[in-house]
Image 1 (spheres, rainbow, N blue to C red):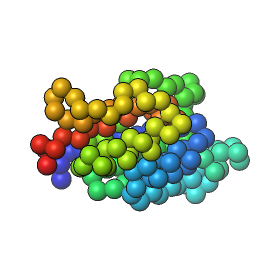
Image 2 (cartoon, one colour):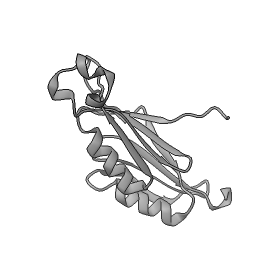
Image 3 (cartoon, rainbow, N blue to C red):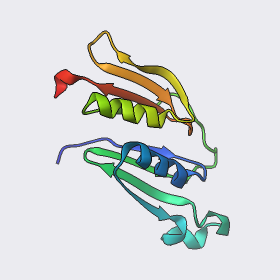
Length: 139
């Protein structure tokens, strides 16, 4: 098996909402494990039982994982990490971009780039940064 890297997102109580939104935008199978369903349940405050311990969204080679488990420092958002979607068609790139940007910010609308690919980026309504790319020469 080849070594791979997957995106792991952290939320502060809205993991289920965000991952359900990403499933709507990208498709795939989505699974959740709540804190209440885990061995951690006994050690956590009652109000955290419905928080997501681990979520996984899978579609083909795409895997996005997430959790509501935030450290003591709280959730810190920044632009140091982006999720790169290398799309298989122009239609897929446009559909995913238009869905992901709902409620967010189109920082760079999809356009043909100088390197010959369709490219754009955005910040979604949860504060996560996405890069979308389609190069018809990479089929």
